[in-house]
Figure (cartoon, helix red, strand yellow):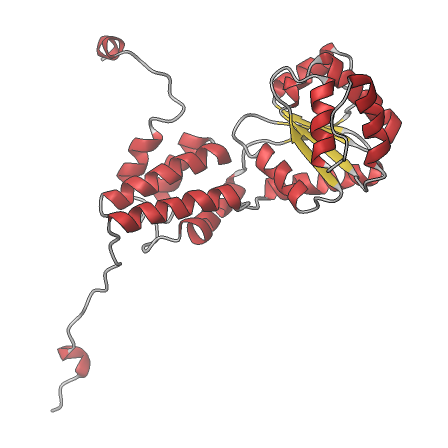
Length: 284
């Protein structure tokens, strides 16, 4: 009787190719560059974009408020980059004055005369926004603005009728309230941490489109998902930092995926206060 081919065929395990040191460095650099240059669309960000579209239509000012590392800045910058001709985006520096802020905006919209005295810049900007086709101005790190600058923004909106959106943390609302300006920027978008399903979907996108490692890491499943959820609290900025380092250390240790134990060790050192060794021993 003829023997089955299946009975005689030997099983050959196909192993994922290992990366040498140069490939490890190159792969990690590629991932870092992708995280910097690519925008990872989340449900949270898409909802924020729809809200910004409404403000442009209604010609109303507003504010985007949320904790650090949740992706407010990346989302705001991406919104601008998708429509550079009609959206201006600037980041305010520490203790930014009206002069400095308005000069930044004039440079951002490519005005031929972006510098000058404070009393000249605001009317120049007010007369330029609509003329240049701008429909909305987004100011990030707005908690850094001086009171004078916030008051001048109120005047700028009244003169130009172009919506202004302030982006920042909870302290921004406190500053606006102290200056009696909350009603000038009345519409609020709460940019919070990613919700459960959004976080899982984002991890799957990162694994497929950003990491693209030889073996599946299954970031959105099991213990690895739990580690990432607990260590990042679903904050995009922290997630990117932890994953980038975890990939580098996993590849250096011969893995072709994000290793669970390495990830856990790295994640445990992010966002933790330093505790002196003697204090640790005392608590043991």
